[in-house]
Length: 528
Image (cartoon, rainbow, N blue to C red; front, top):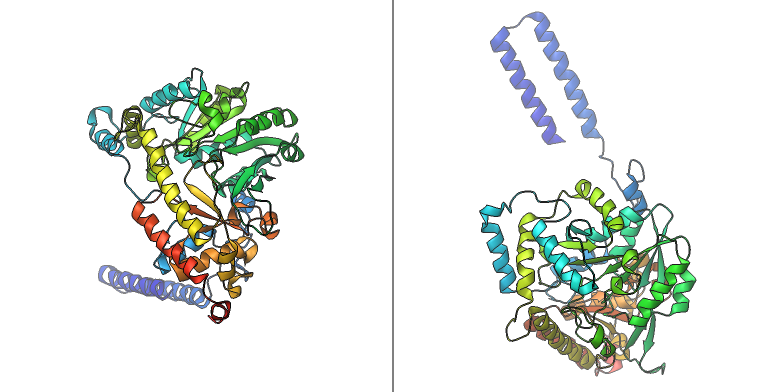
């Protein structure tokens, strides 16, 4: 405010001098100048004496007055999230980061070459706007590919929408489907972005729990296990208010691949839902099925070994929007090119809404992806295709990290018996590790944690970052608040293996310190 006062005073002085030099000192002019100066100085003085009003109340919540509908739907609690909190921890501590799911290496050379070629191709005008619903070259490539995936012809102009990442694709789907009060089903645990996108559309998130089935049912043994969708559970939560079901396979955060039977449960349950209920099939990890279901060999689509597209099930094309992106597949999450594919009646509203949200995704990057897609089908570094190479690469990284986790005392899935995809391990906290978490860290206030309390999973991850130099993500943000407070997320943490071998080896070294610490006598450990 002092700065503003100085500027106004200087302006007034200049105005006065200019007036004197131009007009001299006629009495009326002089009086008007003095009065104006006095009034402005009083206003500045009054403003300077007022304390600027904070947008937050004493509890850190946004004051409700004046906010638009979107903020009100999200809630006015303006508190840190798991991502802001653990980003802060990574900046304040020297850590090996296995938290956020992005690869820490370059995209494949053919993808980078495609980007350079697209940027330099002045003949095709890649630096200007392109078609809002998708760059023609890219939608043609996607139609060709999904024709094989889904076993049907795809109209590139009416049945595909290109978006700024898969997140925007999901946002547009929900905005064009959901009316205030509609229910949208998500399977718990879930990718946390889903919940607030549902709220932004005016919908109610309905959490259908996946049941964790340990390999060893003995309560005294901490083992890995599988996450299972039970048909009777789904039927308990679905109703005529259900407008959409979000299916994510391979699944973030667990790595689960939904079985064919489970997908058929979902298809059958649609009979109990709103007649216009749509399945939003999030398939961003479809090319990273590192442990394919053994029974799926006969039903695999092109290069998606072990993956079944929900829209390919009998009768499901008309009730499905398939969502995907290039970021995870090509290790280029910053490219931010996503898409959704479905029948024209579901795509038309998205095409209508797109220009009011984003006129078009980057033309250069869309053109680059259109050039990269056919190149990915070709032999790559001794493998049948880039996709085959990608699967082998991630399998090795998964095994390297899983070995280190087991040695440290975590329980992880047995990928010889449990199918898996994506690039996360949802590890179960072993007893020896649980005993190492300082009691002073558990059940303490933490604004970023669900419910404002750091439960066991959160306390462990924060302690690992601050004391062991390893950043992982607690499980509780992937559960509803009710489930988190009931302790259903206490035993798990999410660890990413989309990292270089050097990063994973550094993480293994950090994890080994847990095993060493577990042999420290209890008396010495408690004294720390």
